[in-house]
View 1 (cartoon, rainbow, N blue to C red):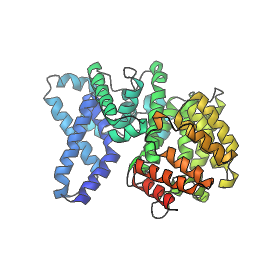
View 2: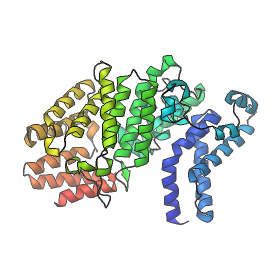
View 3: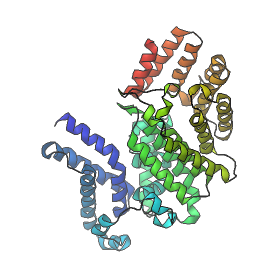
View 4: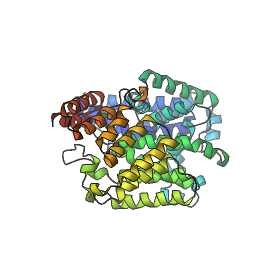
Length: 419
């Protein structure tokens, strides 16, 4: 089996797997079974494509194979006729149906979304599951993240995450949750979890936890699409608009975050003329919509306000770091987290000097949640370097490089250690 073909299949799978699971789940009404059938389609591709070649539309091939397997499974089920009645659509009608785009959904967002991915997210975020189970399952199904990647996102052991996902799928299957968007009265109860998952998917796209690439653009685009749809579904929820604002503003920098060789370029070194002006304007407009609703700022709105400080600065030197540090202090109050405190330390180090930032970082040294988190020694190394403590900085950068599973990130950290 040619390794290039296997690599191509892996790349297609990372992009298409969530859509396939969502499409099959609409047929079988069982998330666990849908994931199993999607996996069978992947196995079929691994067996077939090296000999026959990769199809012109590999995503459609995988979807068709998985749906055909789903129908075969249903035909063997003595309740097949009842399931057909519940579904109300035959396979041909489903294939012919088009998914309304975002613009169309604005007319009647709740009734016309018609998106399998969005349905899958709300099912995976059902209140019957614990918060951690909802997040882990949705990242697996919708984000296409591996168990290892999810464990890194949660800063949790991989076996814990694996067990969490298995139990969540079993619970949903036993409860027979309908594959539909929740009623209006239940929407708000699930929205917070869905927003959190969308942002975790975006973050995995924005800075991949593993692999050869610094970013995964397909995940960024999917998170943006879902976030915009959620804001249309819940126009009176400031955090929905805050999340969209945050993602738009961060995504605006994507073109400047890598150089011609694909190597990472840190924020302060980026060519800001390469930032996407359309996404910046969209992000600032979404932030204004969130603020106009007149409620206390939540975590996404506060993070969007921080991103807006960067977006409004024409050069790195013009960045209002004192404002950013104050916003991080408010974010730490609203959403206490050692990661937030680490980011606040960076802002304080820029606003008040590296010694002030280092004091805050050193206060986090014993945090269990940051054990194995590469950005802690990375930030510490940066501050030590600015203080002229070069040997200590080098050791911190090497320690950070040993912690990361992303090849580009490791190369960046090792280069800083050599410098």
